[in-house]
Image (cartoon, rainbow, N blue to C red; front, side):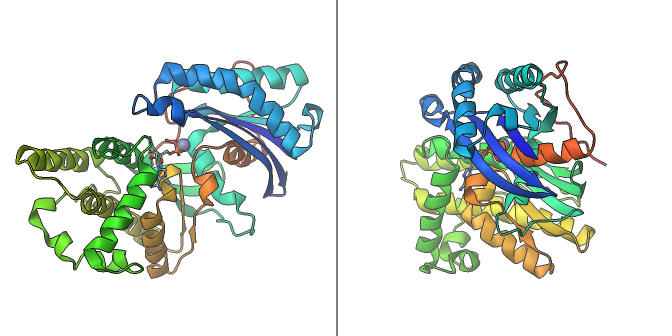
Length: 362
Ligand code: KG4
Ligand code: ZN
């Protein structure tokens, strides 16, 4: 089945053509028009500017996606589109475009939840290595830090989440304060690596050695864990963020320059350890479930390494999409859309976008 999929929930417009064959996928094209440069000027996504940029890009990238895949619109057998959650004006661009295209060309349409799309990016691995439900899914992005029990391809249940800020949002906000351009995740990752190496003197096993280093024991650099101390699978990243801002202020007020790399390493360590702790708890609770992580923050090198150790300790497999599929893209929407279609779900011209999450907890 040839699927044309659209993603426009935040600051990336994407159109992708994916070939689905009995649950194995071939990405024929995955065109992403990023607005990052535009939003960088403001230090974050400006919703109105995002909607306008999506409107300007969507038609062009659709032609491009079809051309790169070497097909025409008449070959398309299914259109999938992200309908929620996200910025409402941004989502509406993709939804309206997809509805018009589907109805004018008589092509079936399915609506996709953005987070189900991120989890579905784990099904796109070209090696054929992919998770099979049931498994534990972790979505880590600019808007989500959520743990799901994935019982079926379209059957996800929220079992843990952040009570306030998302992990990616916290990297972006703290990164901005220490001078990393938006979106700060990748720069934060690199600066932290520098900090870990500085703290341990080891260029390879720096993360494992970090806790024993003098830098970790430095009381002035202490930060709280964003893992809630109860037995829930929940996080609070705003506590970590506020403590980090206070720490930076203390240095500034006493006229001292903070070591940015050591600070970034400390921040990353607390964030990653919190995720490792709650995902370990989830794997204890659901024995035999493999682990799959997705979303922009799944690109984080320290998180990837640490969670590989968590999965190994639990005797389960870890699935992470390739770096190019961690961020927002249309191919993941195509994979999730395929399963919505198989499940009998269809959308029509009454489809509307929604800013809200649709995956509920137990
Ligand atoms: O999934 P995504 O592309 O968009 C949303 O759905 O939010 O995620 C974007 C987030 C941003 O906060 C960005 O800073 C973060 O992913 N990110 C990273 C890394 N690369 C991107 N965070 C940590 N480490 C990275 N290497
Ligand atoms: Zn996303």
